[in-house]
Length: 122
Image 1 (cartoon, rainbow, N blue to C red):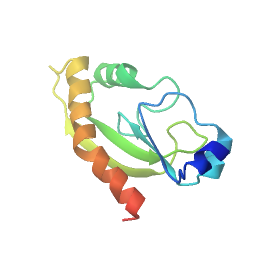
Image 2 (cartoon, rainbow, N blue to C red):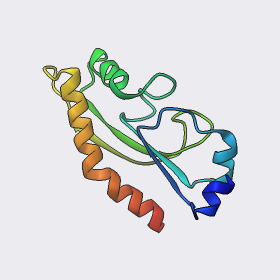
Image 3 (cartoon, rainbow, N blue to C red):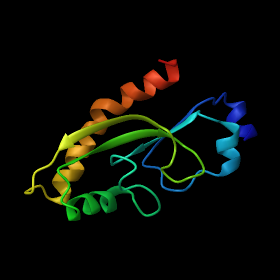
């Protein structure tokens, strides 16, 4: 923690970060750590739900849409308050790779703006 403080870190943004964030770090940065999740939480969240596992579950369930969620990090995996969600329609013909690509496009389109809005307190 002193190392983070020595560099002036006041906000943490996670994207594609798999390990659970330790409680001491969450306690030190309350509502100052956000995460990107490749699904519409609370669906397809929690332990083991990352990357292709999420998209495979979405496909297996026959979902008609998927999306991305930006949320605050808490000690509960993928359980923090939702900041923003964006969705995209799916068709039955979409493969797991197609689903992943559609979700990735949402990330590129929306994630930077959401991060900026949160940091600026909008």
